[in-house]
Image 1 (cartoon, one colour):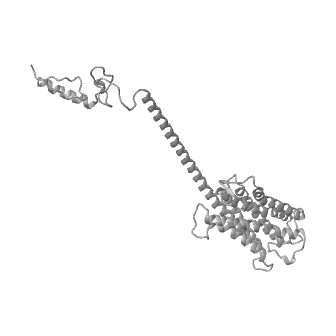
Image 2 (spheres, helix red, strand yellow; image 1 turned 120 degrees about the horizontal axis):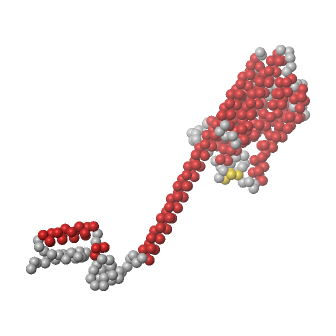
Amino acid sequence: MASDSVLFYVYGALHLVLMLFALDKTRKRRTLVGFLVAPVVAFLLSLENFAVAGMVDAQEAGEVSTSLGSMRYFVHAFIYPLVLVTCYELGYKVHKTRSVNFCFIRFDEGHRDHNSLRHLALRGFPHLLSLVMCIISLVANADRIATGLDEGGNMRFASEGLHFDTMEADLDSVVDVVPTLAVAVVVTHTGASLWRYGTFYSTDVHATVINPWIGMLLGVVGLLLSALVTPADWVLPYATNSAEVVLMIGIVRAMSLIDHNLVQCELFEENLHETNEIGRRIVAGSKRGKAAMFTDGAGSRNGGGGRGRVRGGGRRGLPRTGGRGGRGRSSHEQRGPAVEAAAADVSGTESESGDSIASEDLTGAVPIPVAAA
């Protein structure tokens, strides 16, 4: 087994591990495009590296593995377009949830302006660009997919940098450069936006700008630098593959951070709805209480229990307790518990002394003892 093939086997194994981590996050967010595509990207990167390792082993043995070559050239056409879609969708979702502007798209209360043609174009542009990249790559790789051989030795299949001095003006050279540069531009913008979001808008406050949200940006910058400055005779000619591993680590880390932020936003929204519901019930109960109070007040006024001067009374505001023509309540009806007790006590005392008392009416009157005859 050649030393180069061992390195590619390691790359493939690392991508498989990253795929498992991505699948764990995808299990929680099955409806989000970015979370669904990320494990696919890791799996395709793993396949490509295993295919390259097998091709290197076959080459060392003096053989040519056309089946592995065909698979590698076919898989390679989908990797960078899907990387672009994954990173864009991850950034779009978390910015939309927090109503933070992203990729020149403005959000208001978690929604973008669907009537804006500019917003519609910006929303669909990365998907259209990835589709065009995929179609062009398949067309450029058609002969390699059919034969399993790369007779031209293009840079994208040599795991080296982009050597502009040896490129020719043909479709193969365009496919060598355009996917890498397109991913670099879009993912750099997305990574920078996520870094800004994590620094200023995340639900978790970070004291400095050096925080976990910078991972995707570092990965894509490393990929761009390795593609631009890697010489053919460098001691590590496969730096682009290493940069792909770092970029995938940044994507998986971003998935974890975004999932945590989405959970916090969902909990906040749930608590807000509960608080609003409690407030609504309190307001509704207060209104019912006021309505009942007004209803009772109206009934009292209609029944003659209102305030004001009472007819048939002696003094103003006090009802007549007895006597002629009294329209008020009887003395027994007007007595309270204290008055009844006082009346019973006074009546008992006077009866023992032989005195009599007119206890028919104790309200408002002082009992006068009468001498015995």
